[in-house]
Length: 315
Ligand SMILES: NC(=O)c1ccc[n+]([C@@H]2O[C@H](COP(=O)([O-])OP(=O)(O)OC[C@H]3O[C@@H](n4cnc5c(N)ncnc54)[C@H](OP(=O)(O)O)[C@@H]3O)[C@@H](O)[C@H]2O)c1
Image (cartoon, rainbow, N blue to C red; front, side, top):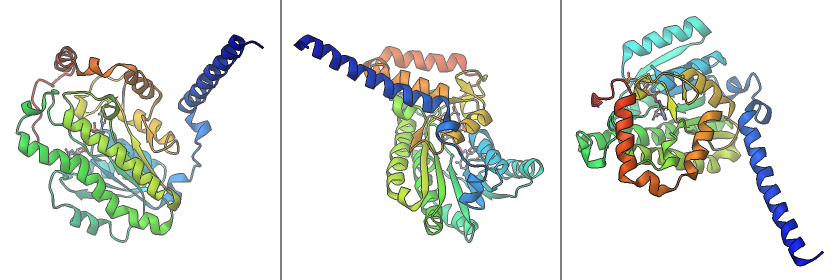
């Protein structure tokens, strides 16, 4: 065998291994129930109760329903009691499970003693840290965000501090029982480095890193901790965009993402969002960072999202 023959064979072997690994990874994404099967009793075996923040609508409500449908009782937390009561009744009527309502505003500093009190003595098997807010309805440059000082504090409290505090409240019980699952809702923008969502995207990078490090710390204790990073789901936050291949309905996204629960410390939660994530990572940063791209993104949101022309009021 001469030198060039050896080089070509080695090159062929490297390429085959590279694409072989890619193929295996892709089959994980396509067939999660084959690679990461969850027994029927999986969620109830984690514990009696699931806690979901931001659960009166959107993705949080879909998690509350999905976990109740799996046989768990649910604690649902958000700001508007009337909406929570309605969701609790619907959960009771459709699944026969109990739903406990807790009213709290996660943009505030001082809600966690009350929440800890409400959750005391509960056997909590699953925590879904779902609540999150964006700074402005229309993505904008940092200094152009309305009420910047106030909004900044609220966003950090809601998207960052709440997640860590809720883990602090629920994790000790899971550690004692040697089982549990914590699902932290991140966002696709955490990996795509999108300007104009600066603070929001950075808060979601926190969600990713916190989840991955926490999983490394508590995996040995039998606890699953995972960041779930959707791109577009049709909810109030995204002005109820019409659903399709890329924009998923909340229940569609949640049912899909739960199938990936045992796939590792981060998932995009669905086939299409995984593909979007992979594609975005191949686009050079300088394209995302260009002024032209930023203007186009802003115009796209203004034109395509019904209602986005009203600046989101942050209460
Ligand atoms: N939708 C998407 O395309 C998308 C994409 C990527 C990531 N995400 C993430 O997914 C999560 C859920 O988003 P979503 O689209 O489902 O949002 P949503 O439809 O706007 O629902 C938000 C939920 O959180 C509650 N909530 C909002 N602010 C709150 C606060 N300060 N304190 C307590 N509860 C509060 C709301 O009820 P009240 O208003 O009654 O409090 C509601 O139940 C967020 O973390 C978001 O960042 C969403």
